[in-house]
Length: 69
Image 1: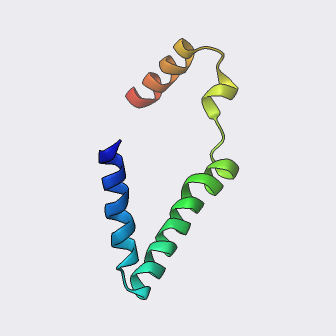
Image 2: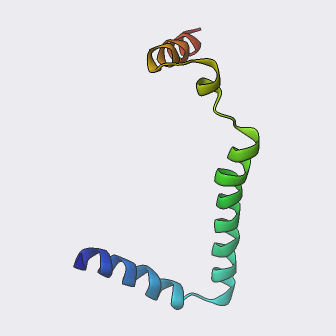
């Protein structure tokens, strides 16, 4: 538990000591990551395998077939 607390303190202190310009850049990076991984996934990357196949065996067979061909 103490290790986790030390790691968190390390990053918190580092963020506090950054310049204002650096903080703005990190905020932009975090916003872009949020958009890429959450917003785009919700609207553009549907769960294709779950809609086409019922079990894991069929899903894995399809993926292997697509990788080979």
